[in-house]
Amino acid sequence: MVSRIFAFWVVVLLVASSAFGAEAQAPRAIPRSQEQIRLSFAPIAARAAPAVVNVYAERVVRSANSPIFDDPFFRRFFNTEQDRVQRSLGSGVIVREDGLVVTNFHVVNRADALKVVLADRREFPAAVLIADERTDLAVLRIEGNAGRLPILPFANTRTAEVGDLVLAIGNPFGVGQTVTSGIISALARTDVGITDYSFFIQTDAAINPGNSGGALVDVDGRLVGVNTAIYSRDGGSNGIGFAIPAEMVQRVVESAVQDGKILRPWLGVKAQPVGPDIARSLALATPQGVIITEVFANGPAAAAGIRRGDVVLTLDGEPIFDEQGLRYLAATKRPGAAMTADVLRSGQRRALTVKVTPPPETPSRDRRALAGPHPFDGAVVVNLSPAMADELGLDPFISGVYVAEITRNSPAARVGLRVGDRLLAINARDVANTAALEQNLRAAPADGVWGLAIERQGKRLEERFRYSPPR
Image 1 (cartoon, one colour):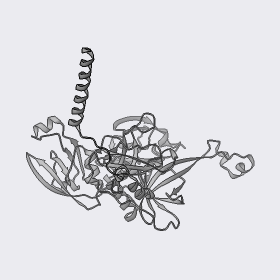
Image 2: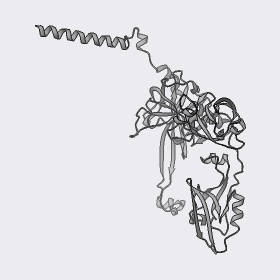
Image 3: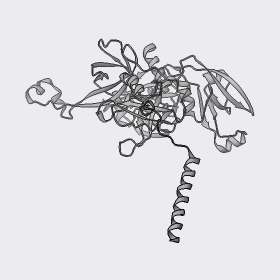
Image 4: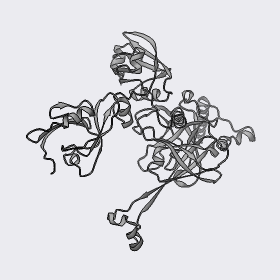
């Protein structure tokens, strides 16, 4: 009897302590009305989903058969038509009522034909206005009379916060338009390594293959970003997805409409992050900002008074933590726009106004096809300017002569020259530009032994070889 009474009180104490703990953590309540039970994301999805489309891309892959079968005569009589058609599926977002669609570059890359399918199942061919690999964005125009189309307005991502609710809308695995929900998991992800202008919104809303180019929308039904990639080991969603912020998407769309090409403003600086040790030496409470290590002469930063050794803490009020963030924020502005840089110099903070402009095209690219009795016959070279280097994804501070093309089986190909090489010197004479290069090539060495110095993948390579022109 005593043992039963003891067991009873033990149970009572456990229940009481459990109830007290639950009450201390957070009170729970059941829904008090039918309206609360029916709370849903359906109104947001209904408003946003019609502006999200499917993008079908087709690419013809030529058969690897003998070139003889490229002749229509042989194709007619020997049935050698073995070309394959590769098809891929992605998503897109209508951003203008006249049929402008944004999607990912990798969705439409190398496509021979594009088709856009609207949410109401209407199908239209589409043409590419801009396809920019460096941002992984492409702008398409729907061809034909689609009428006035639903659009997604751009959100102000500067006001977005970690924890905000978002919906991802797209066509995962080709199963049809799908809506998934989640939150913004992180902002300003710059170490993802997906594009040159990394500054991604991270979300745990389920994103899968086929969602690429689809919409990430906020609770007001505005476009927060374009879904572009996932972190996955098996190809499925692991709750780590990345979207290109709306401000970059908007800049690319404006470039497509106004300029017909991407004009990327820059600051004209190189920088490195401020680590903990440097932050302590600068009396900063936390590691923040970037140290300017190089300033391009006559560039936007130099004109604004930014110097080597300055620490840029914020740009237009946005905290800076690495060079990628600095480049991204500049690239989202229109050419000629003014930005305010919060700069720390010699312990003093100052605000400097930087007017961002596209990288200059000086010297002119002066594209030349090399021809003549020398080992570089068959190479096409250009001068490197900041603008040219930016187009090629190279360091804008690099100058010199860049190998843009190599003709197959040409003397240049046989001596080992490759596309992407930067010519530094020929026969111990520096190569400053394409004109100087051609001048050097006119003076062939008497003994037929040529000296070549190039830069390839960041390494200097030097070689001497004998060359006799064909007779």
